[in-house]
Image (cartoon, rainbow, N blue to C red; front, side, top):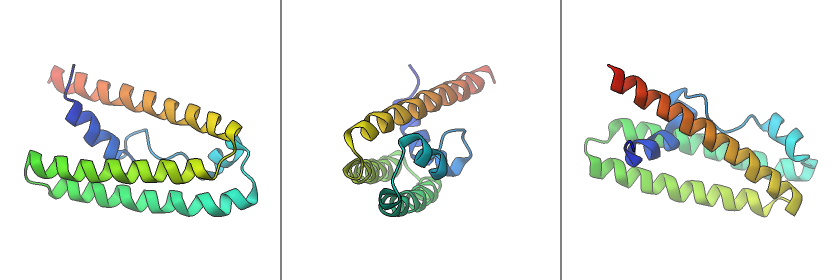
Length: 125
């Protein structure tokens, strides 16, 4: 198994690093979850804040000079992610939460596949 630390770093930086996995497009999410206008008004700012957080995390990781510093950045990113997910969940109805969980699972699967492909490519060099 490749580095879990590497996977965590990729998870924290995908929206900025250009990996295929990032926050889903809000319009697509709106349609898939059948969000009301009121839900959109509450959730869209959460997505914008998360996008900015991911940008900052990416910059912090690039500037981190030690594994310890990177771990610290990733711990902060994990907390931000948990906060974001709980705030989004609080805005959704039970059936929407089920679909949101599916969206997140699909994103994780794509991310893992992308990460594994990168690890395999690096190993081939």
